[in-house]
Amino acid sequence: MYNLIIIGAGPAGMTAAIYAARRKINFLILSLDIGGQMNWSSEVDNYPGLPNVTGIQIVTKFNEHLKNYNIKVKTEEVKDIIKKGKIFAVKTKKSVYETKTIIIASGKKPKKLNVPGEDILLGRGLSYCATCDAPLYKDKIVAVIGAGNSGLDAALHLSKYAKKIYLMDIQPKISGETYLKDRVSAETKISFIGNAKIKSVIGKNFVEAIKYEIKGEEKILPVQGIFVETGLIAKVDFANIVKKNKWGEIMIFRSTKTNEENMTNIPGIFAAGDVTDIPANQIVASAGDCCKAVLAVLYYLNKFKEK
Image (cartoon, rainbow, N blue to C red; front, side, top):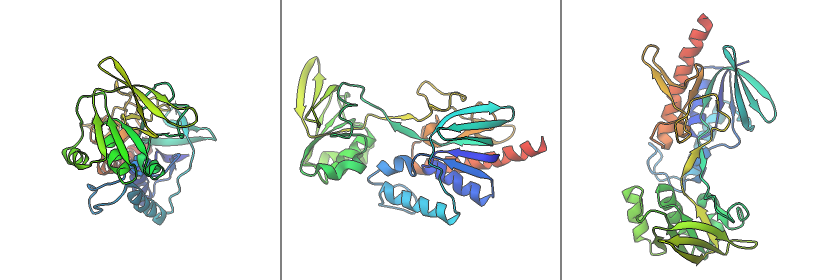
């Protein structure tokens, strides 16, 4: 029986683990990876005390901190959460763990295009992670689908390797933060194609082209790589027990009577970071969010003892 199970090991989950270890909580952390979305960030310049670093460098720092407390992430995928009276059973593919409280910090995953050829050519020229795969496209022509912050970041990272980058979006203009838009506009390798509705990914064994439509006219753009950056969706398939909003994000509440932060609609289950309906999807915000969640867990566990 654990006092706390943390699901996810991104900035939120790792922060929760560090705080739980410092407070001597009997806990378990479950995640298929370490770092979450931080691994995808080529540049991070807004994390206090760590300017001009990559996402992987921050992950390394977080992981070193975990090791200081002998925290080990159990690499198991959570499949379901079941309420059993006052406790919970967390089911993975390998086992079942019982706990008094849960913090869901599973983050988000890339949104798919859902077009023909996408699944078949995944890993064969189509990728959801420019930070991971950009070096493979040295001197090649690639397309980035999505012109929000993540798409702009991907295009800029690819500009270090690729010969030409086509930034494509269904919207007529580039969105995202001003400083990213300015950098993209200044990069001669990057060209923007707006009002582009992606129809299919073309290729036999590897990506050869992308078919898209502009105002009813279909066009084919020859490329050797495609990076999908159309947004993210919450990784909450296992968490049907909690209430979610229309975007599938976990809704969290604050009890004015007990000062319990980050509680879901199920007492004892908390959530933090990008998996929730909190709008600030930033590394530092996720870390701070899970700090509050652990403190709320402590308050809840003290009440649990009283009962």
